[in-house]
Image 1 (cartoon, rainbow, N blue to C red):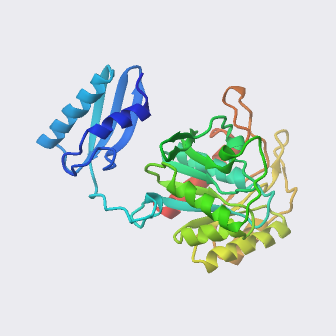
Image 2 (spheres, rainbow, N blue to C red):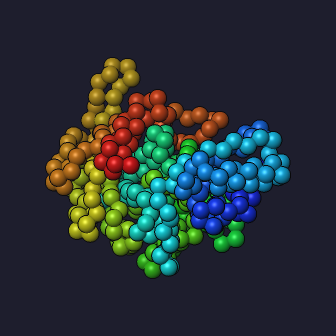
Length: 344
């Protein structure tokens, strides 16, 4: 039975007629769909409607049918520009030619729901049709796989790691590389090395957005991110409580001092709304997000109310909100604002 990995492996033997490299090496494969013996591909070439395209089409169909595909569907698009040679020693994701938008989710302190915001923003961007990666960069307090209900581990082929795909989001976390929820006892340089490995050794593919769930505060990992990703943008998470907003201002100040653009503030746990009366109770106070936004001179992207996601036992993900739910809709609106502000 053909799988996506097998199809890509087979296409290693087929050359792009314009670049004279394999379709995999040239980055020509834009989409792979497999269902009931049917293989659908979207391929990018320098010119469409040419004899070279027809030859390529015949070669691809021949290889895939020879491997057991019952039918093959091909769509071609024009490559916008010829791919540039990668920078020596620089992972493709971090090269100056990369078109991936990096967004770090930061907070001044723990317990404000930063990881919940990271997970649901990533899922919401994917629901809006974007290609999204998520790095659980909270090395000590990794929680993203558990929050998303991820049970499997990344696949390893040769020296490449393939991230786990959940809800259309490609995920990598320290949790995949430790046993039985063991603590990580590392010092700064080791943290930076692991973060670099997440960029250099993981096969991310073509991404619109890469989100990083940072540890709270302004420690080693946050510093490494600022050095490794000079063009990274940030979303700052706080609660309405005055102290949480005060501490979050430190993370915002760090972003500004390292020339990271702050996209805006997400105020989590903004209020509790009764399903019975519809009244709002401001349990943690009111106005912290707005005061922080005013101090940092950025907008408030959203005010997320308190509420537990409905648990689906057949598709378990304890921290992911359904897009049709009230809180899920809040995250969709935040994702739309992020797309608008980044122009992706």
